[in-house]
Length: 60
Image (cartoon, rainbow, N blue to C red; front, side, top):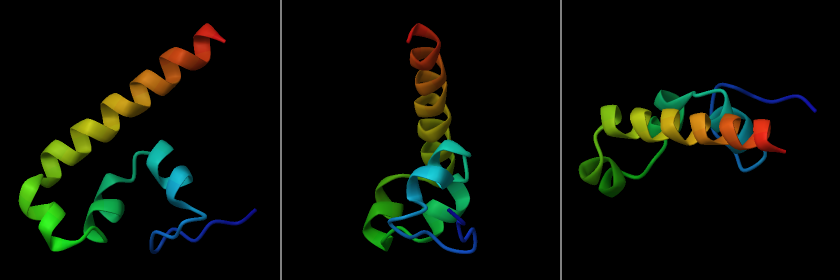
């Protein structure tokens, strides 16, 4: 399945998230969300999420 990496869609969101493409995802978030969470915080959250995913994969 090909993924478009120029914008976030429901079909490529998971792929972009796991690849750590936080800037592209954040850029498409609504402004209210962006006012609550800075890009640096969002990037850190995605990084920690991906670390946990990798850690849990090793346990399987």
